[in-house]
Image (cartoon, rainbow, N blue to C red; front, side, top):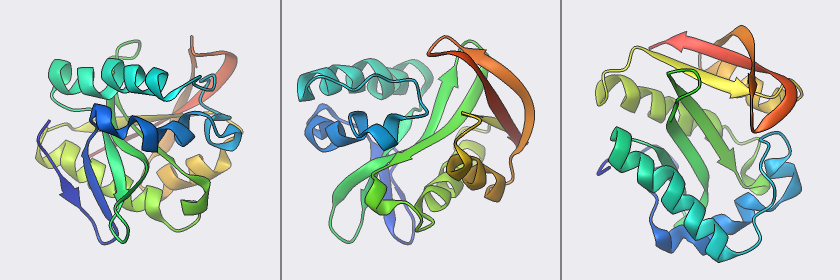
Length: 171
C-alpha cells in the first residue's frame, strides 16, 4: 500500500516493521485494549510479528489495511486508523486506536474521515462497517459523528459472549 494521507494534524501511512517499538504501548495499555479482545502483547518482537501478520499482510492481500497514525507536530506514531477486511462478515471495517493522551481531541474523527474518503475515492468502496463493544461509548460517538448508525448486533470469536454493535454506513 503506497498511499500516504495528510490531514490537518495527522499523517496516515502504511505500517512497517520499524514501527513495532512505537506501536507497543497501543498493545499493552489496559484502557486502550479494554474493549477489543486483545491480550496484552508480551514484547516488541510480538508486536512486530503482529504488524507483519496483520496490516502488512493485508496490504498485499487486499491492497489496503490499517494506517499508522502519525502526529505531524512531532512525528510520533500515536495509533492506527483505517480499513480492514473482515472475512466473517465479508465487509470492510473502519477502526482506530490512539494513545490515551490523544483522546478527546477529535483525532479519531479526523483520521476516520480521511480513511472514509480513501475508501471511497481510492478503493471505490460503497459501504463500511464499524464493530464496537457496547460499553465503548467514546468509540460509538466517533462513528456516529462520521455518519454511521447501528445496523445489528454480532458476535466475534475474539470477544466471546459479547454482542458487538455493528455500525454501518454507505459512502
